[in-house]
Length: 170
Length: 418
Image (cartoon, rainbow over all chains, first blue to last red; front, side, top):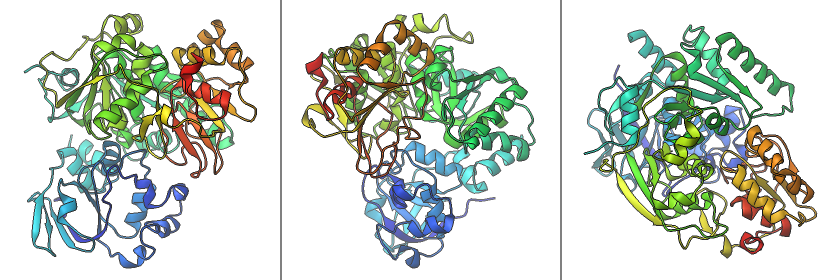
């Protein structure tokens, strides 16, 4: 099984360093468990039409140390419910990285990404080539390779299927 | 090129070959330490059986479970979670430590901070065992791996070295030192790395203070923190160690990703403003903000030196009317010692509310704030909603500053009371 390349538009760019992902749904909504309700709150503070504008496969782009603070899982669940797949950032906070990779979320650590893309650019992440391509602007940048374990976790869909595959092959 | 403490420990637990930063390894934890919490332990116990068909962990003595959150319980559901944990531990033969205090502290008291050991948890604050030379890493949900197989997959982290120099002024405590480190090197300087703390100024920081500094390491981006064992730390750990291991220290010529020297001589008490743990300022520039409650406790404070300085400040004084001061010693051992020293009596006489150890004050499960309220806190974190309403605010300060704020009902400089 090969890791499927990501292709879609940049649905939003968070330029700030140390972005607290809880703000994606708003701290007051972090305890909502109903996924439809949570998805409704997602990005509302940034663009009230966000849910209407995004398409399956779209991605989020972030700045340095993305996910700093005390990241919870609901914001990414909400984005995933809207069809978003993958986050690209200048760099990630380790806690956020570990948590989301274990959920099978593709994360792409790509220094320079903020200079490469604008909102609604069409982009592609090629795992085999190790580059992010901006299809709209015809530019590209290399990204940092995933560790073998992280790659398998994203490929299999998360921690449990990854461990099942590992234990079976042992 | 020499090797770091992390490289040495991970070499031993990854089969003995010489591993270096950047290598991907399968590492066998010496200790798997967790507390019971919904979404973690209950899910792990179920997944072990249902997804992996595993009835028992191998070598139960490697595992330790703490009941320190939801203590005491407030709903039947919480008690059901604890019952499930008690039953699981009994069935598995896994040691359970209930109501002994906050697990990260109790783990040190019970010898899980064995120097040279590799420990894993889901919670990153376990990094405080690094104060004794234990490599202790929080894996979040990946902790499941440690319950379904012997080893966990890990990339050997690089290490950034922080040399502390100078002396500490009156009223400046270990958590000020940590917050100052964040201020100087930034909240991402140690991303995915080990933060190694050393230098001559360590002599002015107690073992408790070292735990505080190491326990907050995640806010520099670090996956854990370590301090090379020395005479003082070995005197604490040697009688407690659970297993016999070689004591590891980083070689003087270890290959560090970066080395920072931070002088503490001019350091003042710090305040970390909401809404995030990197918002570090001098306390003296933010005096006078009205606060309604104060929390002295958590795995990051609430130890003897914190209780002593609070008692020193509050002795013969009164907590301001209408101010809620919660003083929660971090473990039963600490509480007993503090009682024997008369500290608890002094604090209670001054108007503090105190209780047996619990994690619950730190995350707003109890002593919950409503919208518009502000607290000074020695807890771990100041993100919105951490101690109640998302529209309440948390100012992180040292224990002395919590005591000073309790007297005045506003953010105050503790140095005038010392």
